[in-house]
Amino acid sequence: MRGKYLFVSAVFVMMAVLVSCTLMNQQGSNQVVIQVSHDGSVYNADVVFAKDGLNGQWVELTGTNGIYTFDVTNQDGLYSIAVARSPINTYDATNVFFIHHTLSETNFVALNFHSRDVSHSATITVNLNLSSQYETMALFFLTRIMCCRINLNSNTLVFPNLPKGTGDLVIFLYDSSSIEPNKLAIIRNFALNSDTSITLTDSDFTNCEYHQSFQNIYLEYWLVGGKTRILPGLCKNGSLTYASDHKIPDALKQNNDLYVFRYDISPKIRYQVFRSSYPATAPFDPTAINPNPLPSTFAATDLTSGAFRVSINPYDSGLQGMNGAVYNFVAINYYIDPQGELRVERRYSVSISDGYLSKIANNYVLPTINLPAFQGCNADPGMNISIGKPFVVLHNLTLRQVYEPADGLILMTCMY
Image 1 (cartoon, rainbow, N blue to C red):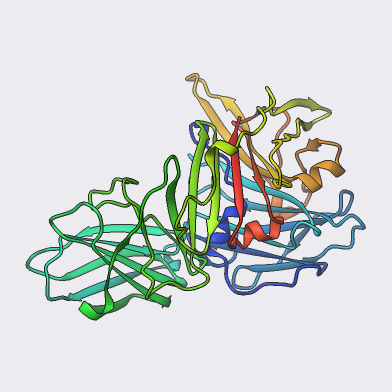
Image 2 (cartoon, rainbow, N blue to C red):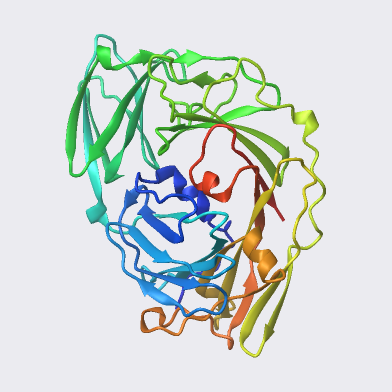
């Protein structure tokens, strides 16, 4: 019996770039590089498949330390990727991720999943040797955030189950007088390959630098070193505040550190701008962002001859410069058990770029992969199947630049 069904937002796989590694191919190459990571730790998935063009054969790929490659020969540069994850237990569903892009949009794809293998995690023990007493420490590494109260009788803190890998380690210190951080340390290119102990002194920390907030715009997160996501508004009680933004101290800032500013156009539409420098004035004018209404329906669905078809309604935002889009949805294969509970047997997270969507005339068919390693992952037409709440992500740069965010990137996420 599979897990009780719960609608969740689709995994927007391209945002796995937040933990991307340094192995990249050149834009314009026919070789596609796929990077798979788990909570920031880069290692192989259960199984990965790829298909060249619309009519090519699915092939199983062999990865090395989380990196997979394959060549695309299709004249339109169309390709598809599938990643299957087996159930954790009898209550879990089989999870499959389908990604469909074109070479002209990107030849690099990054996927990040929650880790299920404890062998790929490690512990950091932090020993504090400070002249002042602090109350709480927050530690950020790759995709993980952990808070811990500092014991007055011991300045040793233990942070278990962190993803193995290399990235920038960021630490906040909070004193008893404020719920917001007071001190900040950044340890660049920190390699966590096994359980590790570090000692930090006063010289490792810098005072937090605060900057003015902007009306209707808030600083959502920092992207430190292109990998580690920092919530600068994290309070020592675990809540978030955006009453006063603070930036990376000038003495610690590097060129590949980014700020992500967010404006909520409506409860269903958010607008994000990536900047390498903290601006002196508002990074954009919220009053000038007036997108067209979303279509009343994301798509029409149909199950014909055992094939699940999704006819997607493309969205034109009407915003100048927003030239690309990725359409996302979750399809579930489910049944109703004797107790009347909805049970999910298979869950499919699908991402389709607008370049690929135009080549299939907006009509998508959930793939079937007839390979032994995919056994049990194909949708069962004898069960119910439906799609969850979809969303589209619009972007102003190339899709590859979404996977590798840089100064000036704009994303607009629209929930249906």
